[in-house]
View (cartoon, rainbow, N blue to C red):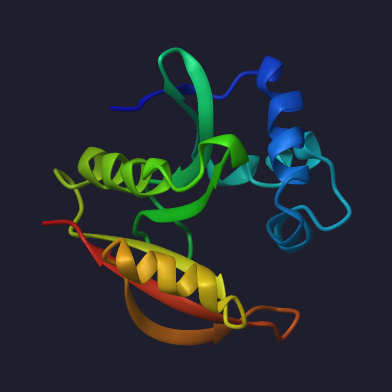
Amino acid sequence: MLKNRPFEQDDLSWFEEIAEAHPVWKKEEFGEKDAESYMISYSMYNGSWLVWEKDGLPVAVSYHLEWAPSNGKPWLGTVLVDPAEERKGHARETIEQIGQSLKEKHRALFTAVPIDRNEWIRFLSQCGFEQLKTEKDEADKSYMIMVKPLV
């Protein structure tokens, strides 16, 4: 079972490394930013950046909000797994643990995925997320809005 802890300044270089190993994710999420600037851009939302550890070593990072300004509901922002630890169920476990931590106060967890990231949508569907609708952001980019019942 993975354990989580708050993200710390010392985790930034590790976060940069795993982002580098996921170029599609990095381009989509960081754009031209570095890890610190990316994280700062989310600071106004008062969400939780967590590092997930197995046997005391970091294997994944996540970001979620208990209350998103868009709909007042909890949102999963990101889950990124160290490439050496991929395909071991860590992302799925991270999502499940986040859901468990929210289910006492909430009935669902939302997320948004760029509409052209079929692999991401497929993975989230396997984790219990259902496709709800599509929306466009202020730059006219389309996203699949997905929801996971917390039962």
